[in-house]
Amino acid sequence: MAPRVSEDYKNRKRLELLRAAKQVFMKKGYTRTTMQDIMDEAGVSRGALYAYFDNIEHVYRELLRHEDEQELHFFDPDDTSTAWQQLTSWIQKQKKEIEAIERSLLLANSEFFYPSTANRKMKAAAI
Image 1 (cartoon, rainbow, N blue to C red):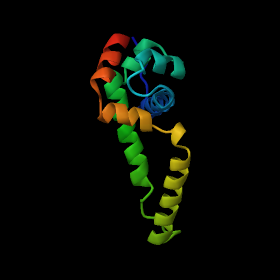
Image 2: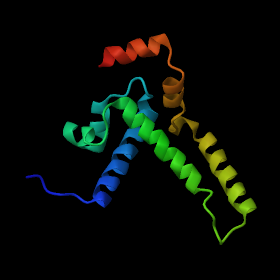
Image 3: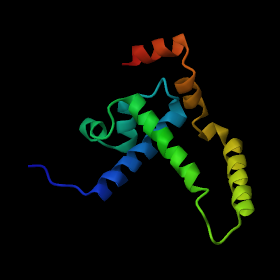
Image 4: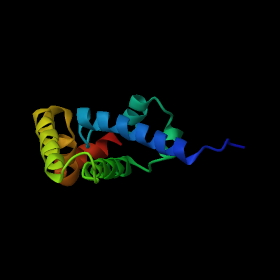
């Protein structure tokens, strides 16, 4: 019988896998990333990764959902600063992300949201 794991453990493991996936997607883009790449980056078995995600698209969608949630939390009410200060802080964060564009999901996002025929063929060949 498999040991029971807490929801907290499952959530932490899922976030760990998403962080590893993000690193791979930033390096390789969406179309060249495989589940094996994510397993290697995270240092987990195939079963461990597939316990959380069905396929590469599922991983990417969950990563995008997580990234969006992080952006939304940036605007949570904050008693220590005004709305203007929060907005200014968010703009500064965006500026830093633009300056570090090579360490972003830009390539992966472009491949995911605007797939070309060549990208689909390349993805199919990698499977």
